[in-house]
Length: 165
Image 1 (cartoon, rainbow, N blue to C red):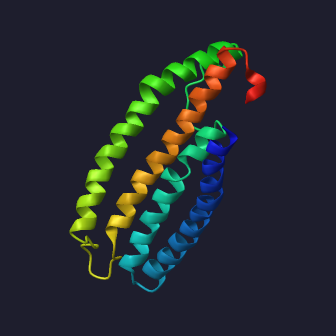
Image 2 (cartoon, one colour; image 1 turned 180 degrees about the vertical axis):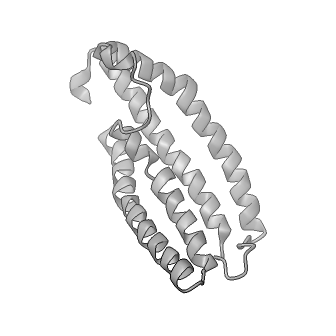
Image 3 (tube, rainbow, N blue to C red; image 1 turned 90 degrees about the vertical axis):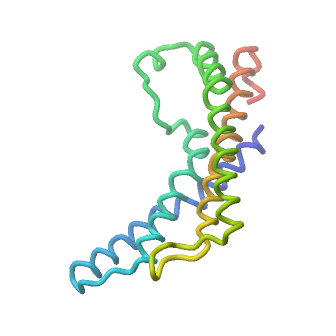
């Protein structure tokens, strides 16, 4: 199971840099726009790409480290076993189906984009928009992988095999 989670650990470490790069690009773009009255479309689009990378590619990493959004009103006070049951049910009936539906839908969307050789509609925009769309698919695959690891952990906790985690 550690091997499964290593995929998201690596992705999180790699794509965590995209946030810093995005901030630098936004600062440069703001200076260009307000000081020099100039804007570069490719830079704005690259900021969007980097936002996607920092958000979707690191979603599995955030889930692995329990840094995702959760309403802890009741959950925080539950026993470890009850939390495992909630995580198991949520993983099987909510997270897994949502990831599978998203992967299938986004894969169709990305394939169409790739087949037509989609490029930015903006003059001076980035080429190969299909790479962005395939990144969405990859992000959901990484989240699904982490969801499966979470389901396995929950089963181990419920069965009293926590030492195997």
